[in-house]
Image (cartoon, rainbow, N blue to C red):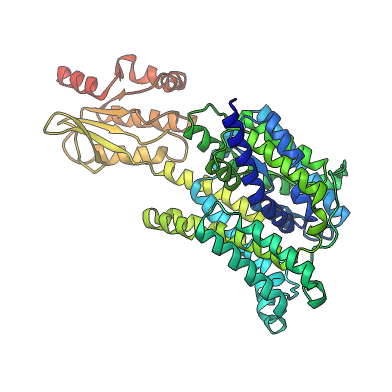
Length: 540
C-alpha cells in the first residue's frame, strides 16, 4: 500500500473517531450502560472484526437500534449501569455472537433478506422516535417514571413546570452547535465540538453547582476482562433479546456490506461476514462492552472521508486508545444534558420521514406495513417491533406470491410475444391458450392457478390445447402438484390437452417424481412458447 493511501486511511480513521466518539457515548446511554463502555465497543470488538470479518468497508461498533433492543430487554432485570446490568449486557452480547456464528455454520446468511427495506425504514423510524423521546427528560432537567415511550412522554408533559433552566440552556447550545456546523459542512464534527465545549463550560462555570447533572468519574485505561453470566435462568431470559439483536445485526450489517461491495465491485458473502460479527460480539461480552453491529452511518463516514479498507477502523481504534488513556478525566464534567442532546439528534436522524413519504408515494400497501412496524416499536416495544417486522416481512412476501401477476401470452401485430392480463375467454390463438403463472407453485397459490384455468377454459371459444408456461416457476411443492394433476384430469375430460413450456430442469425433475410427466406424456413439454405454438399449428 502506498504512503498516500496510508495517509488517506489514517485521515478517514481520524474523521471516524471525531464523529463516532460522541455517538458511542450516547449509544451507551441508550443501552443503559456506563458511558465509557461506548468507547469499549470501538476497541477490542472493532479490532476483532478487522481480523475475522470479510468486508473491507463495514465499521463495527455500538448502534442505536441494538442498544435500544438491549435496554428494552433488560428493563427490570437490574439497575441500569450497575455491575449486574453490565454482566447481563455481556451475556446478551455473547448469545448474539453465538447465534451469528451458528448462522454461519448452518449457512443462514440468507435470513438477512427477510427484513425488507420497507420494514427496516419503519423499524428504524420507530426506534428513532423512542430514542428521541427518551432523551427529552434529561435535556429538560426533569424526572419521569414511565418506562415506555408513550408513558415517558405523558410524564414529561406533566413535569414541564419543573424544567431546569440551566439544563435547557446546555441542551439548546448543543443543538445550535451541531445543527450550525452541519449547515456549513458535514465534514466538521459538530457533535464532538459541542461535547468538548460543554465539558469546558461545565468545568469553568461549575455547572454541577447550578443543578446541571454531569457524567461523573469515568474509568481510565483499557477495559478489564469481564465475565458474562452463564446462569441458566439468565441465558433463558436473555435469549429472546439476543435473537432480536441477531436479526437486526444480520439485516443491517449484511445490507451495508453488500452495498459497499457492490459499489467497489468486490466479492462479499453474508455467511463469511457472520464469523467476524459473531467474534466481535463475543469479544464485547468479555471486555465489559455491549452488543456491536455493523453501522451504516459509521461506514458512510469512512467512505466519504476516503477510507477504502479496514485500516481506517484501526486508525479510529488508536484514537479511542488515546482517549481512554489520557482524556477520561475531562469526561467526568460532561453534562448529561449535552450527551442526551447528541443522542436526541441521533434519534431524530433515524426518523426517516422522507423514506416513509417515498414509500407512500409508490406503494401504499408497503407504507401501511412500514407505519405499523413503526407504531409497534413506539407503542409496544422494540423487541416486539423486531418480531412484528419479521412477521410482516414474511406476510408481505406471501401476499405477493399468493396472488402472482399471471398472464396470457399472445402475439403482437409485429409478431412479438406480449403478456396480457388473464381474462375469461382470452386466447393466444383460436383453440390455444398459453398461460404463464407468475411465481413458484405451492400450497397457498395453487388454487389461484386452478381458478385462472377455469376462467380461461369455461368461457370464450372452445379450446383444444392449454399450455402452462413455467418461465417464472422455480419450484412446485407436493400440494401444488396434486392440483396440477387434478387440473390435467379435468382438462382431459373436457377434451383439452395440457402441455407445458419453459419448464426448467429442476422443476421438470419434480414433475417427473410427482407423476405428472407420465400423465401428460413426455411429448407435452416444449422449450418455448413459440415451439408450443408451432406444434399446435402442425397438429391442427
